[in-house]
Length: 36
Image 1 (spheres, rainbow, N blue to C red):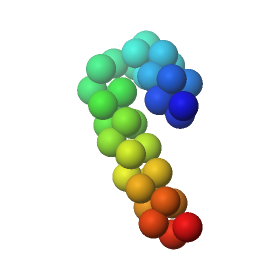
Image 2: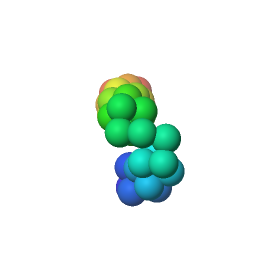
Image 3: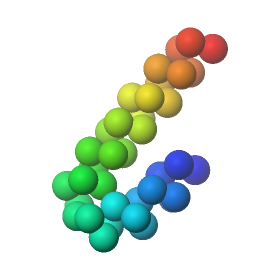
């Protein structure tokens, strides 16, 4: 859900930043999931 929103924006900035953002989102999602 978040990736579909952020990916198009990051495609303008570059593939590398998109990949980094996806990694950060995955880690954040996992962290939030573990807290709950």
